[in-house]
Amino acid sequence: MNNDFGRAKGSLTIEASLVIPLFMFATFMVLSVINLMRFHLNLQEAVHQEAANLSLLAYEEWDVSEGSVRAAVLDGMDDSVKGMAPVKGGADAIDLSLSRLDDREIVEINASYEAQLPYDLTGLFKKRFTARCLMHTYIGYEKGLADISDRLEDEEYVYVTETGTVYHKDPECSYLRLSIRKVSKDSVKDLRNSGGHKYYPCEICGKHAGDTVYITNDGTCYHGSLGCSGLKRTIHCIPISKVGGRGPCSRCSR
Image 1 (cartoon, rainbow, N blue to C red):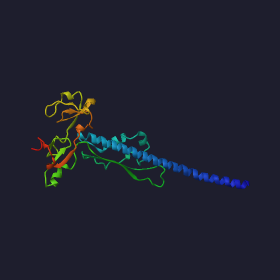
Image 2 (cartoon, rainbow, N blue to C red):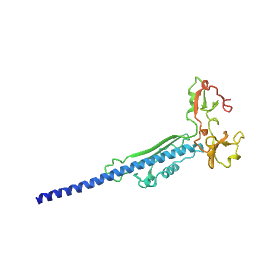
Image 3 (cartoon, one colour):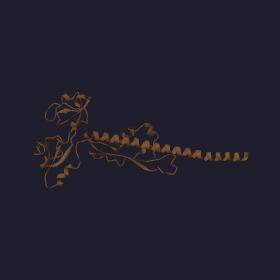
Image 4 (cartoon, one colour):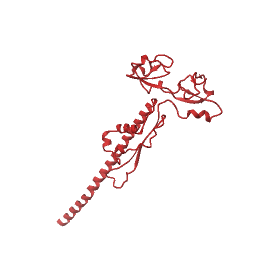
């Protein structure tokens, strides 16, 4: 009886010595995978935010480098996530070389890295992952419009906006391609547009503008937000027979 109890007790001790380490290993492995998912989601969020920022600021002179984008992406991540980055070489080893930063109309950020989990003995998660964001910039122009009329020879094609009252023959017309400037609200009262007229607050966003406002060379309003509809141009390329009651633009349709 005592011998049987001793053997059973010894068997349980051996099983426990095998099961507990395996259980602990599995637990640490699951936590490592969760940490990898947390890191990737945080990186994706930072990449998307930086792409949105670049798209919004594209109205200014375009001067973007891989180094500046890298710094902005890393700065946009949580410090606790970067400190525990499951990446070979750490968070600083994130590769942005495949990003597309030389086109003012399209921003594409590709942040890739090789995952390295501390308890991944099988190398199952030792793969390259990429956080990617592709975004059209907020410059009010659709790439490719310029050559549509060259491809379609049956009828002349012109360019119109959704709310405009004229049609344009040149997609680069200043009425279509807004030239937005950022100025202080205090100085706007002394500024004049290209026609010599003063700037008045936009009915949509001007009344609640802060210390910084946005104006255009040909507009008559100042805006408190870059997202204001008054600063956007949605351009359509249509046959000239479809212009309806729109007249020719005085600048580009002569």
